[in-house]
Image (cartoon, rainbow, N blue to C red; front, side, top):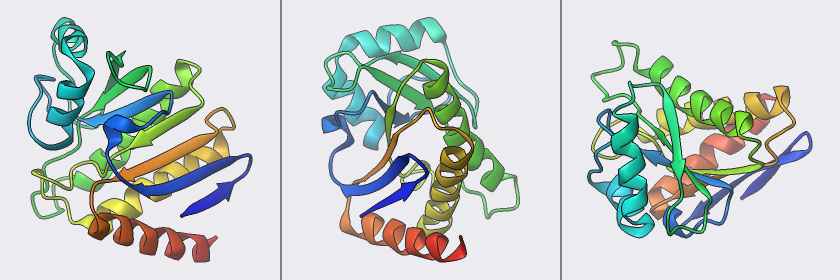
Length: 179
């Protein structure tokens, strides 16, 4: 599924984010930047040791923020590591932290002159964020950013399974109707 936002596009695909050929892919990292399960582990395995070496130099990243490293052996030139919130019922500022994780990643991409970026569904795995709410926050943040900034031409959401893809597609259709 693809929608146009000003001069850019937002695309939803089901697949493996480590295969994306965008300028940067986003890693749903932990605050220690030490690798982990899910997308974080997959990116470190596919990208090789140079990514971890840079993460060690950076040292860490708080929830809602983002840092950038080389893409190592990946097709993407860069990996933007962002830390989403652990879902604790929705009353501990999780929505704002999730929005900030996406926004910080987009701002970092812009500041490095990148034109394309691929995101996973941040915080929806082991951090237990409800998928539909996370999709709405992710997509609204991306749409708002593209409407205000013309520098990023392509935002892709690379979703691991059919359920995530269908949930993001439903939320995107809903947001399109709100415009």
